[in-house]
Length: 246
Ligand SMILES: [Zn+2]
Image 1 (cartoon, protein in one colour):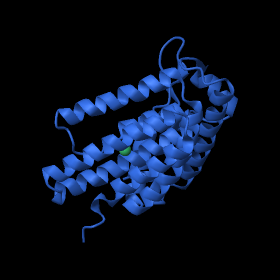
Image 2 (tube, rainbow, N blue to C red):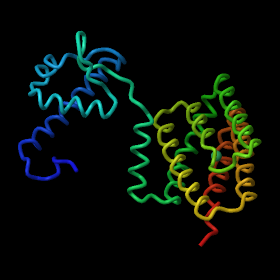
Image 3 (cartoon, rainbow, N blue to C red):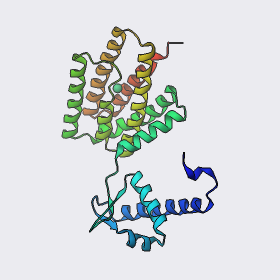
Image 4 (cartoon, helix red, strand yellow):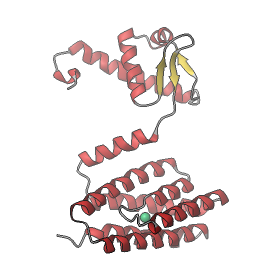
């Protein structure tokens, strides 16, 4: 386990805090300079001087920003700390692991999803464009094809992600994906433990697909209230899938 947690390394603990502070300053600098992926923030010696820290502290700060996928150290001529593209998958996984660890249950996931996905219906209905409609239809077709091939296990969350993207709010998109994936993990686990018969899961998948079609139709027609009503019923239906069990 981490040596930092042993409590016997006083000065290094101070260095750790300093490195965290420097990592925050680096993030701010990257953000203020427009987050240009591929651009060099500075060489190791330049950055040690800019932030007024030792090599050891700077390297720890660089490790932190690398871990957060903000930037990476590149060796050699023209090297230094290079801005990178943050990976949403890393953030989503971290959030998922955290929520599982925190013991979130399906009822709580449902509450959070309901709030987010209903808000998303309003922006999706007013922001939807021609390319957006095309993507929604593609997602529905892909889902239809999976169902036709007999892939019914697990709730198809892809459509929810596409709706979130059409709504155009990255904050909502991130959390909708985290919550939908977590819910799907939990459903899958139950399916595996003592799942309903093949017929029941097939029926649930068909019902979800029909609900998705109806939700998309409401979004495309710009009817936010109808889209919300349909999304609410759909989320209630998928949450109640296992509620009858002891
Ligand atoms: Zn759904």
